Image (cartoon, rainbow, N blue to C red):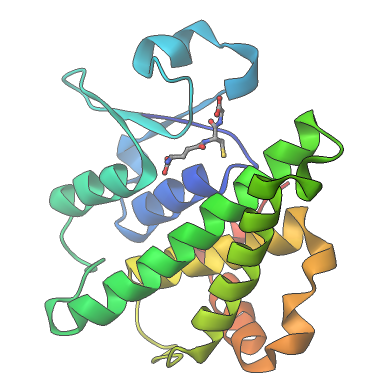
Length: 198
Ligand SMILES: N[C@@H](CCC(=O)N[C@@H](CS)C(=O)NCC(=O)O)C(=O)O
């Protein structure tokens, strides 16, 4: 299998961490790609031109990080990404974390293309969404740190890490110390350090 990715995409990092958690790294060729430069190989795999994309050995190209997660989970069901006993809670955290990731990424890209993006109606909506999502994540129970991370934990920890990486002025850690401690514990795990943003 091939995974098209770069080192700063939170969506690609989620896919890569899941592959590592599932022990699939030896079956995965990492194809480093800049989605903004219209890389022909990436465009062939994903006409939308976004990473991550997973190309299976029989040539199916799967775009969208959460769909890639679903496929990797089918290849290696253990450790479980979506433990049935806690499904609703895990999906709740996944949705919140994913929404934060999207709002943060959209804010970063908006600023890159328009210095006044934050002042637009959409820019303001994204910034408020970031603030409210972090507040909602901080209100969730933090769970058992010893368990293998589920999908909600992976997506949320990567989203919070992306905010620290690209939007440090949001400084959410001082407002939510328990969430900050949770995040620190998760990102200290090997598969998170191995895939750190750079
Ligand atoms: N919904 C997609 C989002 C993927 C995405 O936005 N990827 C960014 C990099 S972080 C990208 O490739 N952007 C290039 C573009 O939008 O043209 C997912 O979950 O995989």
